[in-house]
View (spheres, one colour):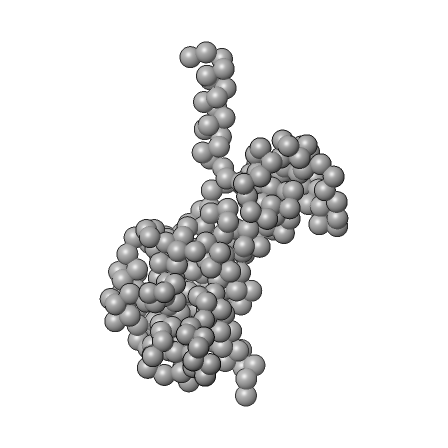
Length: 264
């Protein structure tokens, strides 16, 4: 192998062990809660968050590469909304279902997990992760096929939440549902025409909230595994249904408000 071929091989190996995320907030949160391999910043980027990124990278001994706009765009220009800043990070680490159950049960509060049934749009997944993280959920469960994975787009939309909230990836959601029920969890499914309105449920139990995919909702077998199906009233009939991330936010914060006693 020639020297040039050897160097190309090393570059390819390095790329396979990392991925680029872009956006100032996403990069800053990756620094706060992780250890990026390096930070790249396009020339002439200014602002307080750039200063914060630079200072924190210095504290954590993370290399910063200042590049011309052309150089930056050749590396990270395809990342939507990169704002002239990107970070090379390790590929997202998923947990096993047993790990996320253990983490949820070790919490000082009643366990609260979110199961996403084949959400395909990475923007929806990122938005749901951000809400789940803000509400303090114990973690998410997603399938490993026919669904969005936690990629650079998801991490950008999640604005740091992907660096904090645990995610389990499973091969079969129905089997995972069965395991969760054996572990004492109750499964509540978000479904149009459900058994009752979402605000009439008991959310004080060890809970897994199941959110269906865009357009198709919860799959039949998983729906049958749910202990209760809950719906959101739609007085404005023309609306049809809420976006997945909006519906998830309604359910998550209703459950949280009742658990925390925010509503009388």
